[in-house]
Image (cartoon, rainbow, N blue to C red; front, side, top):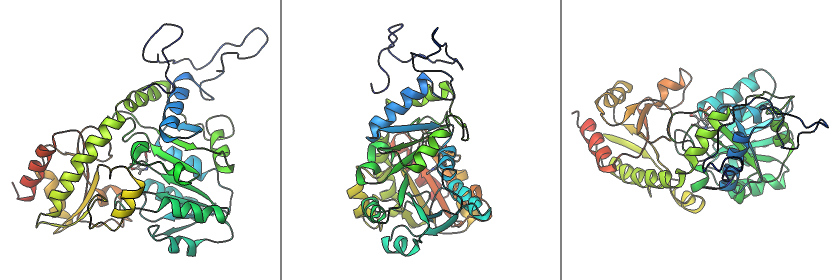
Length: 369
Ligand code: PLP
């Protein structure tokens, strides 16, 4: 509630003002005693957001970017030509495409692996492996990776680790505390939480070669893809209710996953909170709750899955996740022709509606009503 956002000393405003200025005055001696010179380099709203999310994540350093994908790309562009990356294969498709493009253009070598098995990660490591890229829970299959075991292995090999923690949020999972070097979030999702702003943030406790290079992306010498002061302000406003939202959404998601698992029209439910999920025990150890994203396979075809979304009334048919409104998404069609996501998979982002209303909506749609 308070980190990074004290009562405004100039006006007494209880919430931070939005400072739109792109440039700041120097003193007569040419210095910047108030700490800001130019808004790309740093500005009060971005600093407030970075300090606040760093406090939530237990991080010392944070870098906010204009999107989650921009954050991922700040990491990718911080690697040196010829570096090798071992990445989890069930990964947000935009990140996958960025890594694949860097590989295809000869900038990086990337090996995608089943990161749920540490032995598979270990076997993929090469002498030039610089980074292990994890995403847990993963999008869209909700696979769970053992963060502590991977971090311990990587440290011994002198390999850096980064985890996309978007689906868990800093409230449910803290990768840095488990030894992971860097964590990032698409703040577009739960952190901002209202489906009205796009952003991302990269965090660490100890700067390293990749983080230092990524920091240049906000300054000179990098991509310059910074969020606007208004976007930072809006995202920070979302943070105040993040713990309440994610707990309520996770608890509804648990009920909905249990409901879906009992329906004859449903082939498989992917939700780490269900005991039959292969990552259930591990998720129970490294997460405080199981999150609010559920994927499931409908018995039937792609057309059946799309038809089901057409019968839902409360779930909105839309991509993205993490907002207050529940969404349903046919992943394969948004991921494009190269998608490996099953055609009959639907992903649910559980919002803040009453869970019994959401269950009734799904029940009616499954029964063809
Ligand atoms: N990481 C995950 C897990 C995501 O789901 C997304 C977006 O869907 C991103 C990263 C990319 O974030 P953004 O859409 O803010 O660029």
